[in-house]
Length: 169
Image (cartoon, rainbow, N blue to C red):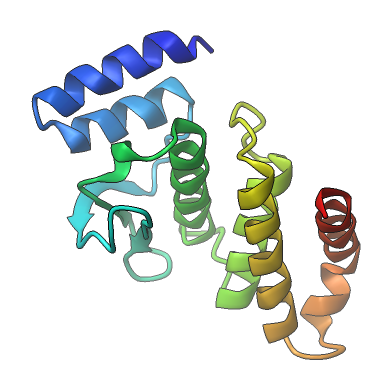
C-alpha cells in the first residue's frame, strides 16, 4: 500500500471538501467494503483533537457509518483503524451474522484494532493508541459479566490484550 499516494488522494478530496468521497476511497483502497454497508454520513465533531465514529442502523439491517467532517485532520493510521472498527461493526450487524451483545461487538472491534485478524491490511497505530484501545477492549470484556459465558469465550483474546498492554508499558 503506497501511503504517499493515498495521502495525495485524500488531500485532493479534502481540498474540495469531499470528505465522504475520501472515506469511500479509503474503504475501497483498503478492501473494507461489505454488502451491509449503507454508506457514510456526517456526525458532529467532538473537538480538534478527538473523534468519534459510529455504525448506525438496526441489527440485521444495513448500517451507515457516521464520521466527523474533521476525520482527515488526524493521523492516517488512526483514521484507518477507526474506520475498520466501524466496518467490523457493519459485518457484526449483517443479516445472518448478527452479534447481539454490544460488549461482545465492542470487544471484537477493539481486539481487531490491536491484532488485525480480519483486516490484516490495516496498519498499527502508535503505542499510545494501542494501549488506549487495549484498555477499551478490557473494559468491554469486564462488562460481559464476571465468569460469564462470553468471558470464557474470549479468555484467550483477553490474555493476548493484557500481554500486549504489558509489553507497551
